Image 1 (cartoon, rainbow, N blue to C red):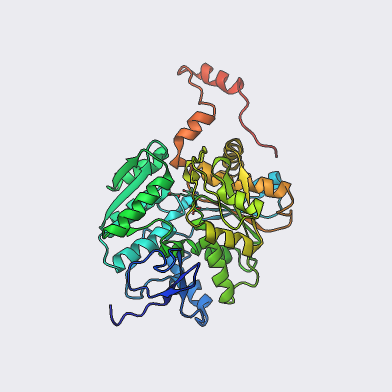
Image 2: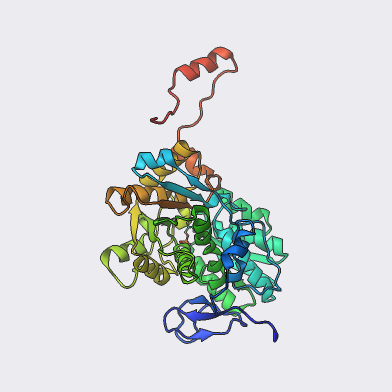
Length: 418
Ligand code: AN7
């Protein structure tokens, strides 16, 4: 590696020790806590000028990604997702300026692609031939695709019977070794961490600090898409809590670069049966109490022991934000509302940001005039079963003009208030 100079070091989030990025390392060799990427210098001249000349995407921000200039990105064109002004939904929930950043528009249908393009590029840079993850589904789908793109092998551990169909078939289609364990995500993660510490397999769960660097680009895109008025609130669904931590890191770097003056509040949302971070925030605890048997219709965030809890608590507290809890019913109602009022179809975990927003507005945490972005993390097609189970089935009639006409007349079509 000799000549190659990395633009960053790794720093432990607990004891502050720093590490050289030459070796494969996920946690602090001294205290065992997570690592974060820290750039050697953020004085990058007129970086904005350079960025403006490139398409909006993860790699637009290459100067503050932890990848060598000489390394070719493993990419499927991730990021650059739509930021949709949602005036009708805004009116319904009581906000003047509401946007949905729809991460379902990424190549494999979720925000994980931002992380995987950087994480798998890092795996290749390090010379790894195998990658692995535990997953509630989207991480697996994304890693499977990027491993295929890179021409390396992929191992997936998922909780048996608890992964939405669309996600499961993605991993299978891309040729990953898919192993379903009789257990939950938290157990799968524990096993895969052990596997990757013992074998030459690169771990791409969000304990991997490089993956989160890709995910932070969502903050950069929000700044660019809303320029010159950055968001005041960013609402994010929380499971393993990597994403909310990564987005917050992105905003902090923008501020350090002098590209924004104020950072937004980070508002997290968890599902009722899997809400250890919300609990810690509401109770003012310094640590989370893991949930042994997490349960929610939003299988993507069915996580009881989020590994990034410490980063997330800091993100929420440092940004002046908080974390809300939503029930399965509220999640499904929000999914329907977004789909029908704005034409944006997201999976249940993603709809939790809309469900949470309603509560933030009701409790006065988000005010009517505040520019607010809800991040919808994954596409609705990921989980077709949840729609079949919770929405009315389409009518079947005889193949005649009369029967069709009768069917239309006998039912009011779902029309929203003007
Ligand atoms: C749609 O795929 O954890 O708080 O293994 O798929 O960063 O964990 C998925 C998480 C939100 C939560 N929305 O993000 C996995 C996995 C969707 C998700 C989350 C996930 P984090």
